[in-house]
Amino acid sequence: MQPPYVLTKTLPGTDYDTAVRRVTSLLADEGFGVLTEIDVRATLKKKLGIDFRRYVILGACNPPLAHRALEAELHVGALLPCNVVVMEGDAGGSVVSAFRPTTGFEMVGNPAMSPIAEEVEARLERVLARLP
Image 1 (cartoon, rainbow, N blue to C red):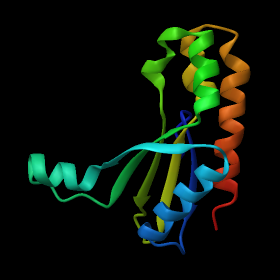
Image 2 (cartoon, rainbow, N blue to C red; image 1 turned 60 degrees about the horizontal axis):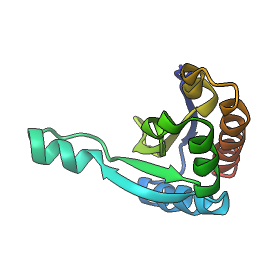
Image 3 (cartoon, rainbow, N blue to C red; image 1 turned 60 degrees about the vertical axis):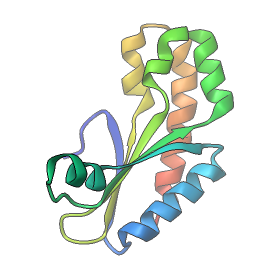
Image 4 (cartoon, helix red, strand yellow; image 1 turned 120 degrees about the vertical axis):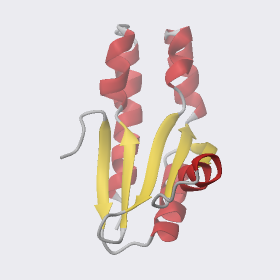
């Protein structure tokens, strides 16, 4: 079951490395740059000695939309950038999940954020839709 705070797509025939490259490229097509890339597997191994599946958190930012959001609500930067996760699937392949802005930004309580969140979410949905 998909949690309500993410958009998710399972890619049973796509290996992890290919999924990361494809997601990064599709994000760029939608105007997002990847500001941060956190290798969760490497971090857990280094800090805790734990073996974990391949799992990366991509901090994606669309500068014009981020600027609009910050103009509408200065403290919304605490919710930026939009995180997109690529992980190895349980049965092979990959899974991609992205933060659902319309759900996440509801807590801000500023109606001016709604159209921005809707636009970001539409772009993230297009990224997922274009994945194989």
